[in-house]
Image 1 (cartoon, rainbow, N blue to C red):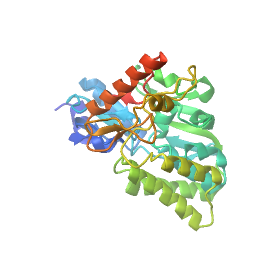
Image 2: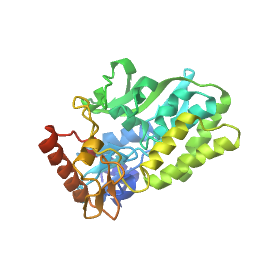
Image 3: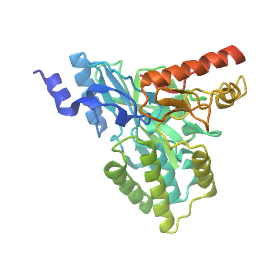
Image 4: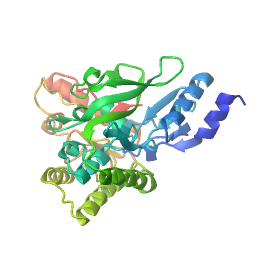
Length: 340
């Protein structure tokens, strides 16, 4: 066994089901799966994969991914779920790519800063949020960023590089990272640290997440964990602000976290001016099922895994929605979820 193969064997597990690594709870067995906890481990994995000719795919919480039913057995899946770090950098927050975005809202709440409320109950990691410029209502994750750190996988001697947020080409669900072979490893926020107590809370929160929260990507478990932290803060005299209560009400009223899903399946077409969910409702497709998958009765732009759905079940319903929208409204909706 050469050095590269030895590294792969040390840092990877074999024949691991991917379903627990996606909020869709869908996916066959990965031939290789790794969960690096540090940027150094991540770079070591990339170097070993390149040297051994092993293709790889990196992802975070899997909240926007549809894994295949039968993955390529030679594909290395790299989960960043344990790549979770929050610390001080130049008086501001440094956050690693695998950190759940919702943790930012809790840290902001603990420090009395409302700017990070937009990340509350966004079920994805910061790296993925930066990649797609995650948004809630009119607010975007890019508004919280100062500098993004990444690894350029097209160059020799992999190392961490940086780019200012103003140069990242952020737009609606868009960023420069969608056009470059760059893997996001972290970011410095443009948010000041309020006090030492806030830093201590962030450290405790990361430890809690790693020990209790990140074992699976189950949406109900994740929702319960985040709400538990909110209630714990309320218990020490930090009330939940109205904006966060509104988000809880909105998400729960539409049953966003009751069943495995990846949230909105298609991007809204702002040129057309009507949300995809409304178009699906006009097509009377809500509630349509295929195998174990169903178009949500509560939100037309969500397809739920309600009974051990397969990836092919989800793809079938996506095709039905796409064809219906193109036929009646004259455009093809662009998928928001990533089909691996």
